[in-house]
Amino acid sequence: MPHLILEHAAPLAERLDIPAVLKQLHETLCAQPTVGAKDVKSRSVPSLLYYTGENPKPESLFAHVEVRLLEGRSWAEISVIQQAVVAALKKNLPDEVVRTVEIREMRRAFYYKE
Image (cartoon, rainbow, N blue to C red; front, side, top):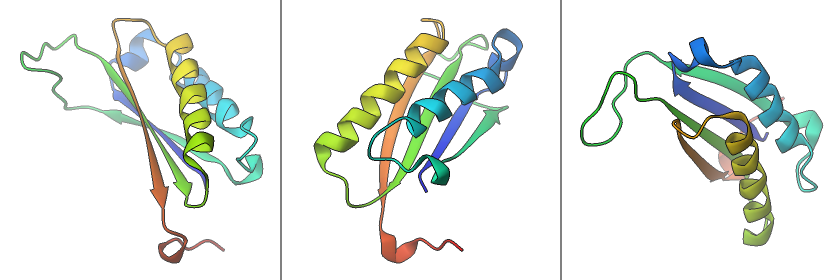
């Protein structure tokens, strides 16, 4: 824990180096002072079928980053993490890509790790 999931339109991989984008996002999360870098797990999930907006176009592209954190951080600490991930996403993706970031808190009682 934490987990970083980069979900993106599959055609985005034809235009960008997704492994490099994921690496940058991973390193950004690892660099946060309230995150234990050794525990970060990051992955990319391409979406083959998707729609965006009211009038979806086949060329519409998106990237959504979900960061899952165990509960216990203050809102200020979570905000710092979110701002860093947003900045990394903006830096690595062109403006025409719809970019979103979601931070989720997980309850310790419902998370298992060996």
